[in-house]
Length: 212
Picture 1 (cartoon, rainbow, N blue to C red):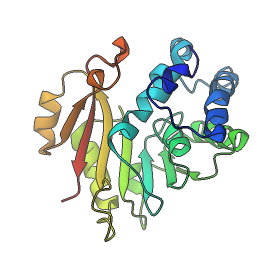
Picture 2 (picture 1 turned 135 degrees about the vertical axis):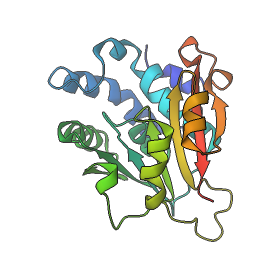
Picture 3 (picture 1 turned 60 degrees about the vertical axis):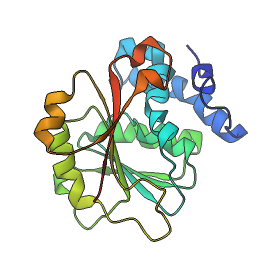
Picture 4 (picture 1 turned 90 degrees about the horizontal axis):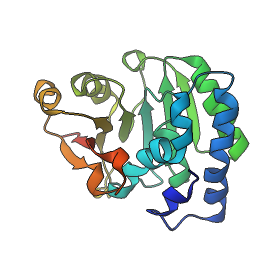
């Protein structure tokens, strides 16, 4: 499956963005042969399972160029790397506790000319002296923990940014009722199968916890 699945839902890519998207799969395949960055069985559905899934965030939220976004527990670079391609004027920091995965992200970014992305080798709870407008995450930990780690790292939106997100946006799957209840958060929830008409998105959700 090639990147046309992404263009089925997003049509306003520049030539540079299309080149970046097109290059991603071969680069990840090359790195995956050396380091297991992405589940091998997922590589056949790379654009559906990783790129389009990450870009679900871009269907509901607009990041503007003054904003800084952190991807918490980015793993192989998702959702942060596709979002950095989609929002080239926004600064992204991709954070993970596994350094070899961050090295892959750096190499992929360099090879594709993604220059609005940096990485940090750290656990979320160890980060200090950094503040972000938005934190994004995909299937890293229960919402209770994600919010506990994220809240101290979020800053209130700058003036004039009332329509921009300000808080935690996470991608999750399965029955989330118990997890949401235990988190004591009141997230906004989107069913991804209503956004993307692909079987993969059944029982997949996007949650947004605004900083109040």
